[in-house]
Length: 75
Image (cartoon, rainbow, N blue to C red; front, side, top):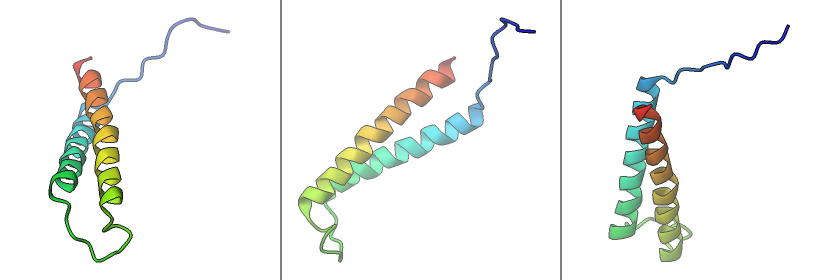
């Protein structure tokens, strides 16, 4: 009782759009952290190296999310 027909799972365009908008917001927040280096009362998070790391991680991770969402919405 095996069938060789592939199963198609359709993607939700509204969920992909929400994910795309969220990813763009996080990329912009990462850029803001890198450019303005806001002052924070927490001594650990006020370290410039930590701020740079958080900003870069945010940008790199969510740019991948933007690219993935754009590829999937074109299908």
